[in-house]
Amino acid sequence: MRFSTLILKNILRRKTRSAFTVLGISIGIATIIALGAVMNGMTVSMEGMLKSGKADFSVAQSGISDLSFSRVSENRTNEILELDGVKNTAGALIGFYSVGDNPFVLTWGVEKEDFPMLSINIINGSAFSQEYELLIGAVASKEWNKTVGDKLILKEKEFNITGIFESGSIYQDKGVMLSLKKLQEMQNQEGYVTIIYVELEEGASIEEVCQRVEEEFPDLVTIKSVAELGKVDKGLELMDAATLAISFLAVIIGGIGVTNTIMMSVYERTREMGVLRAVGWTKKRILIMILGESILLCLFSVLIGSLLGFLGTELLTLQPIIGGLLEPLYTVDTFARAFVVAFTVGLIGGVYPAYRASKLSPSEALRYE
Amino acid sequence: MNKIISVKNLVKTFEGGRVRALNGVNLGVSEGEFIAIMGPSGCGKSTLLHVLGGLESPTSGEVLVCGVDLCRAKKLDSFRARKIGFIFQLHNLISVLTARENVQMPMFELKLSSKERNEKAEKLLRLVGLEDRMDFVSPKLSGGQRQKVAIARALANEPRILLVDEPTGNLDSASGHEIIQIFEELNKDGRTIVLVTHDKEIAEHTSTIYHMKDGQISEK
Image (tube, rainbow over the protein chains, first blue to last red):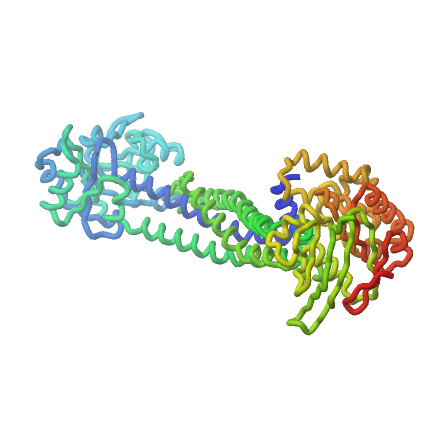
């Protein structure tokens, strides 16, 4: 028999108690997985909005807490284009409209001349040319079962679908695209865009151009990568902080649960500890055995919690209100964080009972009734 | 003959000296001897056994076991693992483990592979006549069979001394007789055995009987 087999058998002695402990920690792990996946999905979504097509960086209003609140004068598009090193610019207005069951369909207002820069590829039909015409993304086309020639109601107005587009960004491809002028009118934002995409000339320094933009237009902020997202969106930072707080709570609550379970197990097996010491087991081996039981319980929780987190998130995204807004993304990092949390819970929760068990006097333990 | 156990003026007190369990015990046991210690409950028999096995440290006196001075020795775990085999009245087997697995418990402190541990456990269980019960968990074994597993476990690391505390106390006479026969066989192979018992009939199987009373020992 291996030492690890003994640890496993010890956990399985009290199946119900172990199962409830695992379940308790699993809920914390599931929350970490779900929040992590949602946050990753939102990050990719934001990245899709910030780095569209050939754009090297994007520009938004400074001092905002959410990118959708950004309001930049359309004139800035031409002013930035005049800066040294800038090859092309494209302004886009972003809005959210209800389509069918989905209340948050991402709606883009862009000039069709900017399609090449934004890598908008029309795979069926043609671009909009009239006021009440629009394109829908390839993913949206499948989800809504609509194609070229069909009608789409947007803000109580009927639009003709003139084409289906693909951009490579799932969030754009789940949305709708119409002329910038029309969306500005629908949103009462004439003369304004949400974001300006900037493509640089070959050899131009992104750092220098960004610095120049921010110096010349103090009302603007540049975003080179998703790492700088915090400049225009605090939502993800808040969510990250919430995930950390939940991880911390999971460690504390889970740790107390594990300590209780393992402590009870140690009390019940006091006499057994005495026997093991009598047959020559060292304090260290007793310590490792008890810590091993605690850590193994938590590793089971990672497996079950990950599964629960995945299933829970997928169930949530089946709801149109959530599914239309975000696409959860499961990364190794998310699972690694869950693993680290569980391992820490196991370690912290097991330390005290393991210490107590190792410190038992063998003679007293043998007399324990 | 060499004394494998040598005890001089051994005193063991508890509760800050209020309880004097051993009160100047002197005892010498030769290598290969099979002795019994008899006496009423609470006279200090089990405490003496625990001191000899390194489970309790002496309060004063001199205790030499297998050449190890137990008053000064630091690594008593290693001493217990290699020199001593304990057998208790309550077999104290781990209930979720099979006979084969229980016997392997002391072997974790030796550098043996899982396969070697398993082979050794099988050999020991055959020795005590449990070849057909190796994969039974202890609740599925009779009292006598459990005590045989406990004997096999005590022999796992080939100790020079067996310290046996009331091994037949919970057994019927037939099972008790079987157990004492195993001890006789082990003693014939040269194993030193110190047996604590209430049972005079069991004690008569040994070469020397000591009597304990009020923490003191005398040869009967």
